[in-house]
Length: 447
Ligand code: MG
Image (cartoon, rainbow, N blue to C red):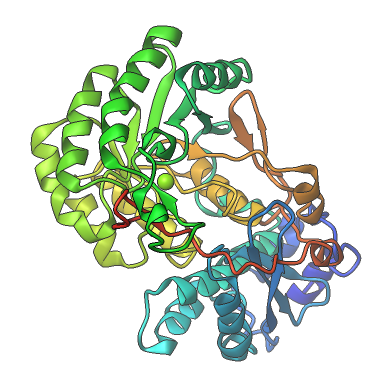
């Protein structure tokens, strides 16, 4: 049996549009073909025929996934390229640049395609091009898994754990409401819970925003004052620790909203409550503060959801200045980048906590989870509750039970996109800016 016959034996053509790639080529057929690559056998490689973006909004977030079609009938892959705030430039990057670049290239060569596409713009490491590249990259991993007859986590080395432990979110406008939410999440089986009072930065605790009265900015602009947030957050931890005890792991996201020196003071105050991690104490622009933070407190730090460029994460990891790397995997260029990042972290005691709210598509959550299963230095995975509408658009979306995330065990990423259903959830008219945020006098605050 030659390779082409083996491929036909996998039933891709018959199973197109489904997740049914479970057949594995026989050992005899594989052994006969072991010593020759497709070139020596005179076979044409399976090549990319189309790279196309699919935009959909079944759950309020502007999701972008990329579908890569191949010269093998019925064989395709999907990858996450979701940049909620700028989906249309990602769409253009895929249609106008990646599709013509990738057409005709051998689907086997993921790393080569990644490196050459990455440098094909000469200027690189921006969020638009990285997200587009991630869509192509993850789709190629999906295709490789389908060809191998294995879930992607097997290609990455196999399972290091039976499932992926996750954290969920608890928000409350006051301490009682927050405590209720934490208790509900504990009853659902979660062992890691991120606690936030109100939205990020507890804006409801701030005084009336004077800038609105004075007509500065737009009436829709948001507001927060660092002071009330900084004073209340230790009280929030104290309340929740006293209410639910020591057994639950508590997390919190500063969301880069306060001056760095204030963030250092806050983390020192929170040390006594033993948080699992505190996230984004500084913006990426203030990476230089991490050394000072480390000298002041041993609170575990998670960082990186805004990172685009290796210069932002390599030094923080190799200098052991953070404990969890939590990049948005499509934002850094895909699974190929994240698995290298995980390997770097293994040698420097940095664990993973990949970004995983609703502005990562279900395809991206699947990619997160496949990597989580396979790496030794997994930390925790952020999860989100997907609606039925989202699960219908993305059959095979990972499931969560008792706080653990499970991937669909079908070969590849185990997830698909129903293009017809995706069209029924068009993007909203609003372009999706992050709402400007201001202090009481109208001064700009990072989001
Ligand atoms: Mg965050």
